[in-house]
Length: 71
View: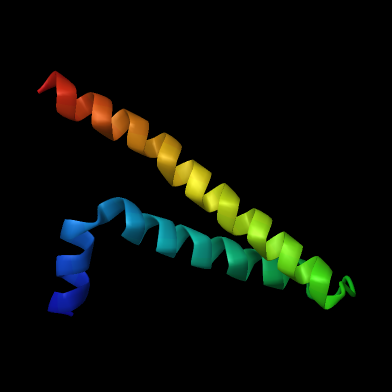
């Protein structure tokens, strides 16, 4: 548990990205499991989902950086 806490404190954006990406992948799987995608289609959707999670955390990080500069 202390390892996770230390990881969160040292790398908050990386930790947030991992949690968000995992959550988004789970939602993707449960939403589209009965659609009948091929393996390549699943991989492309997973890659797009991970990229969207990374972009989201990066954009959220802009506000965090702005807040730190103002203090």
